[in-house]
Length: 466
Image (tube, rainbow, N blue to C red; front, side, top):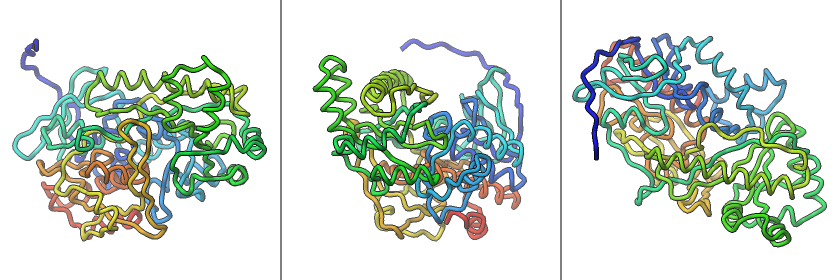
């Protein structure tokens, strides 16, 4: 391999803060709000030009949230409801949101109200430190190369970018290194949903399904109509027998690859707060690892190619979609898993399925294992009982190789299967909330090590999500 040598350079330090947060996605906003509300100097570096990550840039505009989760995720939904004059919070466990409105609301909550500083269009290019301590991060933006010093650092990048660049231990994917297959989300506008529901009631072939689904996703046309009228989650899924029928009736309209792709998961979409929009969640990128820029580039190209084929089928053959159009596609790929930074404790599948409780609990959850198959064709869904829950310990959000590095969101310390249960949006926000609260407790106590936190005091601050 050919190399280029860079001369040693002086890099300006633009900030010295208490907590530096890499990534302003779901975990990052949870961390930023909690930290800044507790009065510590907080700076978030975000590569996109909005906060929210997967739920805004990635268009995963549906939040799964438990009745027992009264944290920042619930606050966000409540404020969106107040703005829209809706009542979607009552739709738990599944709450449709508007990603554009969410961008505005997060700007208010994180920057204007909590007082965290956010640098958009900014990536982490290096880490400076020695031994078990990180001293500064190197960032890159339109300004060029700069540095930020901090007492504590939080990796909320999803991909574990800060930890990776610092040299932290990490794992990827399953035993073969493959992750749950990701999805490129897209939204379709100008849909006559009532026409679709009426057609499904009169034409049983539209409702036939063959794929495994969550129990609360198996909704009749009448239930979907009622849910939409009451600001509740509506779910339309599968259509695989109908896809097969229409492909057979229209030879040559779809390539063999497109037909196979559409049948790997079927067509799956859900309602949005605007009555004529739907969110489509059915593309799949098989054999994905998530640690190579060429792979990511190919994945985005494949995702958009899949979006076009799926939409073409919807527009030609689904009643109510005759005048529909693609509103937008995700600005980022909906990655379910890439690097997982190794913490003091690795959260496991056994912890999930035995409903394990920990003395150093910082978050509780009820999500079961949900592995999107490596080949993109099936989903391993294991629902827990209605009243079952498990804990995630504080030890899983602190990097084992460092004394001042937190990890939250989908790069937190977990196994492949356990992460699949514990990566939903409100859950990542709650993990971030724990980081922000822990960082503030440590700073106010004058502590230098993440392991010195007063766990009882942290649990009191986390009581809304435990």
